[in-house]
Picture: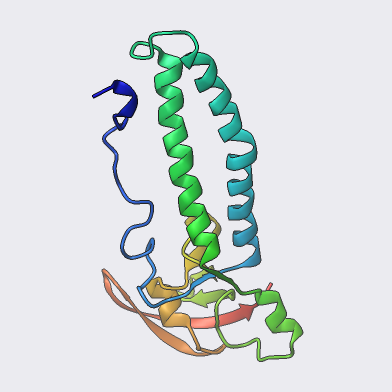
Length: 187
């Protein structure tokens, strides 16, 4: 068979999305904040309009140089194209299945803002009066350094639907921890 018709592979044949949809339960919606949706959309646009065309130019140039088997620009470029295409497919699927929930609209609508729902920024205090602030966001927006936790995380599940002043139980590796909800905000 001609080499032109064989599949090139870097040995990484993983699917774009795991069976569990990247951490989401099978029946769950892919909730996202407007900021998280915009970041993912911007990344997709950058990949499609800037990075991919630049890599295609390099691969085209390298392919014209002759022997591709020892051409580093060609080999690396093809590998980078596969990585970009894999990420583009992933982002496209996640954005297509996203349900954007704007937490700021909750405060504007006059709805109760002392109860914890998706998008809430919650300050809690433990038994030692140590405060911690977390923002409940989508699974694609998690950033522990900023205090952004997924809505399907144990802490978010413990906090959901509770009100300011409530005490909730959080199961941790060290055992049950009681957290008092000090403040709930929708920014």
